[in-house]
Image 1 (cartoon, rainbow, N blue to C red):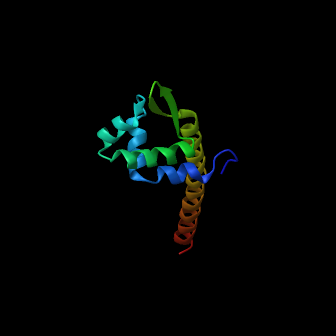
Image 2 (cartoon, rainbow, N blue to C red):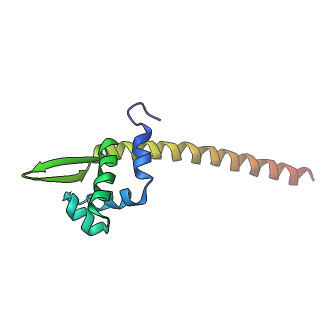
Image 3 (tube, rainbow, N blue to C red):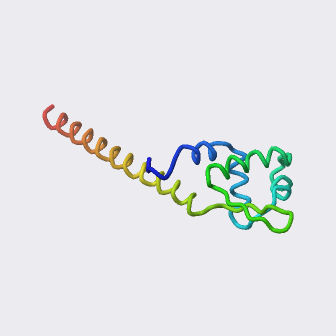
Length: 113
């Protein structure tokens, strides 16, 4: 894993309700009350989930008067995606090599048999 990407982002995204909150604020910033209303979560629960997302640096907060507006930190989310892309690229390459090796071995057995 890259040095600037720790497990907190993956742990934060592991929870279904947090992913739902991320989807809700991916297009527009929302207050915790709006998020609670749209997600069906109680406001204290939504606040707890937002704290986890903030601590993982996946969510930014902006103060507007007496409201706190939440939005996705797309730079951080992009780092998470980049890590997953790198992971899958290397795993798929390894799978391709294994499949090709097994196909060659099977072909050689059939040719010898």
